[in-house]
Image (cartoon, rainbow, N blue to C red):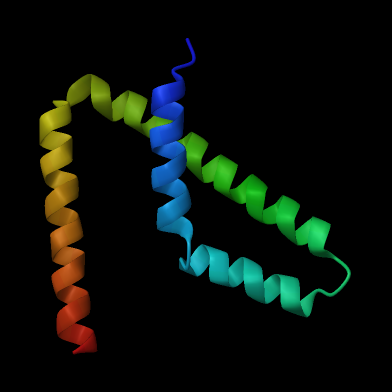
Length: 92
């Protein structure tokens, strides 16, 4: 069943998190160096994002069977904090 509310939430979250992301920058660089091949750059980038998202959803289906979602959220939150602190320390 298609849930439009979840669709909008996920779309907004992924769209905003990808803005300025290294994936978008790589696509930008390919588009500037492969003049006249914008459709190929777009298609390659879009397919890569679709495949990586599909792998994430499939992986979540497997992990979700064995782990409590609340624990997964806590692990993800701690992971983001650790990465943020690491970036602050190493870029300071």
